[in-house]
View 1 (tube, rainbow, N blue to C red):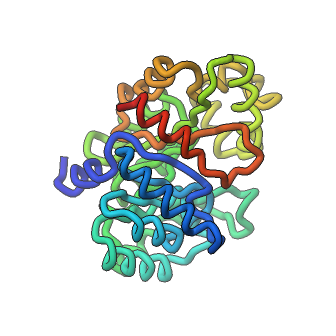
View 2 (spheres, rainbow, N blue to C red):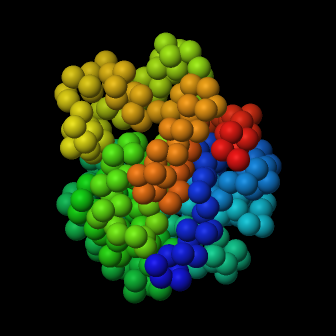
Length: 292
């Protein structure tokens, strides 16, 4: 393993949190976000992944409020932020907070980006521009699902941050990446022991992703069927992409990813709240305790 790869793995640690709410641009929420970031650091999480379409600017408040916590975009859409600006923003964060910002990049989805075209070639071109601007390979990761993008994560980035995947996908991704690159899948957690209620919460959240072919195609590659994708997802699918249950069960589900080859797991708490930007701080505390 290279020193740079080992250093990134040490920086992010075994667990981080993934949250849309942490990337809010509402000035009124800055204090809340800074306070939450400081608590995440004190709880022992290695990194805060800024969900949704985030950018380096969203990371600045969290980095300023902490001294060790890493912050990453998960993801920055290459269609919404040009490479030249991204490189300049990266350099500014790196100067202020050396070694603590990770640029997570992705191609988003055809339904969400009007410019969407030839996503693999577009990502290659974007990485070429970052190279010319001096953004180091070891500080950028890709939201990779399929084999070609995983190979690109291995060859042109520090690793992969796959979203909405299973331990089986993690095992396949590790085979493609090899040992050195970072493999940091996102995994959703519902802190609910009742099966019916847990699946209800999970299914209500999953349904929006089942309209996006990048995810459904990946599920089919993993052996799920078209029937598994109906009505918000079958129990089989829901149970594969969400952890729920008591502390022991949730801990075991998370550890399945490490056993399959993950270096790090980005944990997204799903509460059933209609406010996606709400910060589930009580749940983050419970997760930190059960994973300690």
